[in-house]
Amino acid sequence: MFISGLAVAVDIESYIPQNVAPPSGASYWHNGAITIVGYNDMNVIFDKLNALFLHYHPGFRFNMRLSGTAAAPAALAFGLSAFAPMGAEFSVHETTTFRAITGSDPVLFRIAHCSLDRRAKSAPIGIFVNTANPLESLSAQQVAQMFTTGQPEGDLTSWGQLGLSDHWREKSIHPVGIMEEAAGGLSSFMLDKMRGLPFAPAFGGFPQSTDVVNRVAEDADGIGFASGNLSDGHVKLLKIDGKTINDKNYPYDRFLLIYVREMPSSFEAEYLRFILSKEGQSTIANATPHYRPLTVAEVQEEMKKLEGLTHRRPVARPRRDPEPHSRGEFCMMGPPEFRSWLEKANAAFGKRHLEFRSKLILQGTAAALDGISVQVATLAITDRAAWPLELRPFRQLQGYEPADIEVARIRYSASEQRLPPGIYVNDENPVQGLTLEQLKRIFVRGSPKGDITQWGQLGLPAPWANRRIHVYGLRDDGSFATAMRHEYLDSLPFTRAYEPFLRPAEAAKGVADDVFGIALLDAGNRAGLPDKVRILPLAGAAATSYDVGDGRYPLSKHVHVYLNRIPGDPLVREYLQWLLSSEGQQIIATERDAGVMPLTAQEIPRELSKLR
Image (cartoon, rainbow, N blue to C red; front, side, top):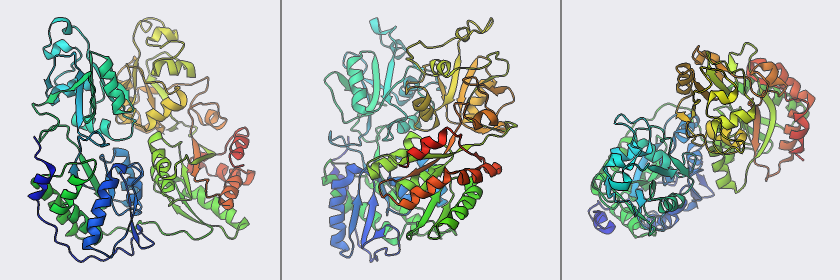
């Protein structure tokens, strides 16, 4: 059992202030205050921490922007936040984007255990069953075998496999939890605890912990993972590895976190020292919603990590903090492959508008979308539509969606070495193509016309006719697969036969090894695919440069420009109108090596109408 928060904090070393100057040269130092962007459940904690820090260091002021965690990684990466207070770990996508922007990985510090107070947004993860279920405890290994598929020890799919008798013996286990695409990190946390394997085919995902608890309360055969500070008269929490949710070393305990850049400033290091002191930990324990302080051993681990950072020799890297924009300067962010055509387009537009000056920061599409979210970029120019998870930072900071203008198409080579998103089958499969309706009925469940589960439903003869379709793809985690599901598949859930992979190469290999397989894959190079797979025509159009260029191939991608319309700079609108003009489109047409091609004549009026 955890000792009370204050009792733990008493044993931690007291804070001894060190002289530290305000970080006047940092990008997060604005109008004499330090900006911190991060977790909205830490407002009360930071109110109290900042007040006490100012007692020791009266020369500081703070500008707290604790609206949520979605924008914190981007703000930290661009130097617009001193550090990033988080209620969950950075996702793989957030870490990869941070690295693209800064050249290094963020550094994580634990500052408190999560809370069991019902008011807290971050709690240890609990494993819930219906009160009718006689089960009282599980091992963490059994949890993994129930919620995921592919564990070396085997999958657990019926309650009888856990020793339950009588009418429970033959009953199927109904696992539910937080869907991968949901914000908050619970799903990622649990998958990491379960060897990173995909959820079981029977798994049902929900956006909120309350949805999970309610489903288990309604289903006697259900088991769910959700925030452990929730309760309902019809569910109960299980012991895991003999530990209750309030015990020390409970397997699914979680932490409040602070992320910093690789080389923290003297202020950032001093504030972390303060948080990890007896005074800082006592303040956290006293603040609503009563997050629990670290143990002495945990504080010592974090302090050792901090000392290692502050004594590290600086790594020679170019400074990547944002520079303030002057009037008329456009900061454009996007993929490195776009440099040639953007430079030509900007030079041509600059001849018409002498006040126009541009700066290109080409670190990739994900970094560009982070840049527009924190207003470092004027325009985010991307090689695909933004994924759902990539729009959360902008929405959280601005309160609305960014404008989205398509200005070009992505070019795919006539030799088909560079392929658009597509549907792949084994070379031995005789299927000649699919309609979009058939695509939907294969990959998701719940279509009004019924699901397609066997190759015979597509008209294939024996020996294919009675064989099940084996469906492959990528994880439904808010990135490519989720975006495709929402854009083309009516936002319906993937079929229970869908086998998700972390990497496209793994899904492609699945089809290469399985003559009854089919996979939905993102754009890529033909050289990276196995020889035994081929891309299918869709809606009567092949994935060729011709069908992509005239808009017939339905999964082809566009070059998107994302911007914040609210400030209303007329030069931004004029620039985009010019890109959509015959002169702008002609520059795009000449840039074959840049991987772009003009819009069709039918598309341009549609995009111009968005600028009115």
